Amino acid sequence: MEARAVEVPEPPSETAVTNDEVLVLDFGGQYSQLIARRVRECGVFSELLPHHAALEEIRARRPRGLILSGGPASVYAPGAPALRSELLELGIPVLGICYGMQAMVLQLGGRVEAAEVGEFGRSRLTVKEHGRLLEGLPAEQSCWMSHRDTVFEPPPGGAALASSSESPVAAFEDTARGLYGIQFHPEVVHTPYGTQILARFLDDICGCDMSWDAASVVDEQVRLIREQVGDGHVICGLSGGVDSSVAALLVHRAVGDQLTCVFVDHGLMRKNEGDQVIAAFRDTFKVPLVAVQAQERFLERLAGVSEPEAKRKVIGQEFIRVFEEEALKLGDPKYLVQGTLYSDVIESGGGTGAAVIKSHHNVGGLPEDLEFELVEPLRALFKDEVRRVGLELGLPDRLVWRQPFPGPGLGIRIVGGEVTRERLAILRDADYVLQEEIRGAGLYRELWQSFCVLPGELRTVGVQGDERTYGYVVVIRAVTSDDAMTADWARLPYDLLERIASRMINEIRQVNRVVLDVTSKPPGTIEWE
Image (cartoon, rainbow, N blue to C red; front, side):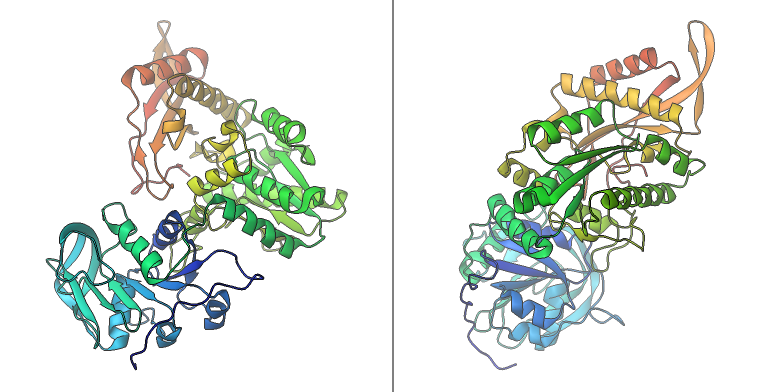
């Protein structure tokens, strides 16, 4: 490739996106979206695209730079994702991370080989030459590695900047061509200076205006919603959670009374939750709202269903059927709003090369004969970003900071058995006790999620009032997390746990045992099903 100077592109025209943008091309890393998230945290809008995204689409978006993600493959493996040379010739800076760096070096004529020893986890980085990318950083620092192939020589014209114990070239740059590569992962918290490296790439190298924030999400999504919907009628599935609430308010701001929210009480919600949702949106926000009582309908469909994926799909399909019926009464709207987040998309196998961990009722559980065009304004965001957007929209703290609650509701928290009216009542009462005690202890905002699980077919022997009992087991699940991609079990105080267990056993006649789940994610997921 002939050396050439890189010119930072002019800002987009008024008809295009008003914020600078850096695109992340996904080569199959499970957490590639975290790169885009870190870029957004630096104040630059970013979105993840598949590595094979059309060059025409990339050019049309006029990004200020590209980032090539990591991935699980070896660059020499049959069928490994290939880096198209045209991506390095767009006249904008490119940063390769891990696999992205290796693919870039290989494409440019450098030397990439399998190392004798893989490098996984924390590693020591030695900066030999700071160059432009690593300017201002310590000469010795820790970083997070995850690779077997290693770069042994940078491409012609490139300068090696750093090394580690198993990576002779752990960072390189070719400033004349605007090409940069790092073997380690700056997007994870285990790389202390990772954010500074990304910020330097965005600011000094790409010349981005670092001013993107939650207000930018509101303005941009309002514009996109108007473009998509036009003068069409929109229907929104409202659960009362922060995701669907923010999505509903965004669409209402964009198209006003063209939106009708449909709240389906499927009988799988927590105690008093349905009444609270109806009061908040109909009375406080003055959003057009139709409330549908469908408890019996969902229970009939769930009868005899125990397998978790089958439950999710039954609930998702029945939701859509209800929406379709309500749509006919509302003049047959063509658009359906959903509060899908990117963590939902990843777990449902929506990321490039990502495995299906479990389907979500608003992603993988949709029926093939869906009659709506989906409007998903939050699909590229994580939960914490959605909360910031909610605050920007004026959503009250009580709704903004509500802990995540799955669309299938309590139906997927009755595990290993079918959903029945009795089991729902037991689980609902247990969850009410848990939430009341968590809030009373001042821990609600500190936890990502806290909820109860009811193993539906499991009974245990107990003794109450000098008599033998044979009752249900309630599992307490409480986790801390930043984005639901990973989570750690919460270390709740022993006296709080004792109080919760005592109340559940004393107040819920059918329960005689309470246990605590101490599994982190990974290896487990947050929800049991």
